[in-house]
Length: 297
Image: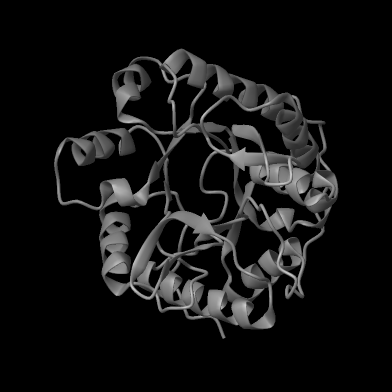
């Protein structure tokens, strides 16, 4: 049974509008003219200290914008128990910041005391399903709110997997009460790398459980056999096919909070704001009545 959690913001606590991943070099420009950006996202691990300029800036921004906190270091899919020290630091951050949303990844990054600076995949089996649910129950009990769990970008598939990724995420959400974060660029990257339909993935996804959508750039490469390989890099503009997949998603899900992620080779504010403006256009040109997603028990 899922662990009991305190009353918390609904999954749509963020506005159904564009947001961007906050970078300190944009602080002054965000205060001067943030349009069309209506909310900001931070990486939790950058703000777990006790003070300093980053925390002071974040406190000021939190008075002006809804904030989403995105974790990258909990290793929810790892075999070991969650790091209680890391969890306690996260709990303190969320307690004083009181963000509109907290999210993490369906991935692992720790093993036998070692931390790997990457988000690594896991097979989708009954055993890993139970482990991930146990970790999410522990996390949600500690932070007193439901989290959002993000779909990964994939470069390989495990032969032992017995669940599809959308089914796996839906079952985690059903068992734990967590919401889902749908990264549309990750869907596009995985679909191209593994040879499935990105639209079919969206059709199978529990869109009614989505509290946030992510968009980002990716790089094109080749694998060891010379076959095309897409890499989720967050270091460039969103490409047109991913924008088209966002349109496809929003037509089925209805308006959602849409984040632009740009974490490496970070551009000047006007270019990032232009990406957010394109997200605003997508949100503003939805059909009058979007298709109702099927609610899964």
